[in-house]
Length: 160
Image (cartoon, rainbow, N blue to C red; front, side):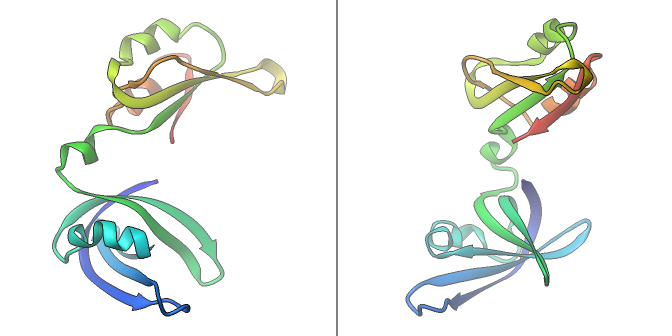
């Protein structure tokens, strides 16, 4: 998933093998403070962005552990950076029939993005789903999923 927050602190520690380092980053947002970790290669790559006071958008993987949810940072971008706001990587649009397809097509910006779009057709009576990947790449803006959800006939939209 993606999270936005302001860096409160960053600590670096050696991990068990002694050769590699990990970063522990405290962030804050409207809901409170949270901790995220990143390991050697990502720490080197994003160290300059993880300075206290910087507002960032992070892509994370979360894992539920007995001591709580563990958040691992995968990518970091400064908030306000065009790329951070610009594009999602993939959308999955769930429909039951063809009725919303023209409206969906009108909402999808063609061409210049990196995003991929799949239509998931839900079969009647619990018959499963069929996923159809749309050809090409799309410029998937942050507000697009909500616009797609508003189309009659769209059951759900997942950001991947």
